Length: 134
Length: 293
Image (cartoon, rainbow over all chains, first blue to last red; front, side, top):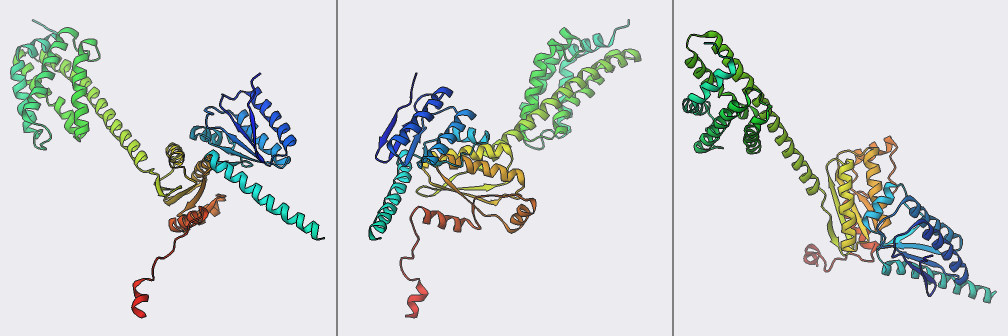
């Protein structure tokens, strides 16, 4: 069975969807991604869908699910490169994906994830120092 | 010798075609067909001649049923004339008078041809009326249809024209909306906005609704859809230009726009600049300050 590759880059996981999503593929992606997040301890997930031309309510819901599951595992999901037609379709379907961050392209999406990683590094440093001083 | 109306009509029109044409064109001119200057005499003459000629042919082969196939080419040329007049801005009366003024010359010719036979004249006139009335109705229908096409095209153009997306700065777009928002227009607006976001790689889009006369629940829903779609593409939207009355109406209606809103486009632009890490500073003190020193 086809699988969508998941790439790890620093604290982020990158998924680019370059084939037409069918339901089984979407379910497999959710499983793989969840496993990968827990294994690598990634803090950000970037899903690039600029090649995705057709979405249905199921795919829309899968994106939402992936985001929710990732959030439970403490990783933030950013969906980038959505086409106008796809955006209109999702809105008309009533799926506004309010739990997901979005960005226009990979560069901006990575900037969002990087900002979170930096922030957590700073927090981590402070809390570590705090503990040390105690 | 008794002839039925159709035969009389066919014979008369065939024999007196030239006379009828002359009388008809004279009548048209007397009726002021040329006064508006929208049509030239030669053109009018040509149109009249071709209509009469086709009428003669159609009568000869198809009788007085103007919906018959024999009348197809006549109907087509009347439709052309009607269509061009609708576009040139003739009134319906002007357009239909062209055809109906043909009645008088034909009736005259009929009574000349039949002499004292009143029954025959009546029968002929009845046939002529029937044909011309049917053709008249057809002309009117085409006229109406052409006008509707013109109106339809214009409203499409207005919809296209009134939804421009302008670039205010790198990555900042403005969408000044003017006029009522209905579903069809919102569709166009949304597509234009999303495409512009892709083309300009915009981070922020300002939707200015100063020109939207009323905001009811439906309009608010349309706006929210556009904003949600823009967000899915990774751009934030700011709504600006909500007038006081509209703000009141929206609150009274229970319409909630859960978006960032600013009162003017300038405020929204300032926020957009701040969000993208820019600021506006005055380069030098303005003139009055200098003169005071």
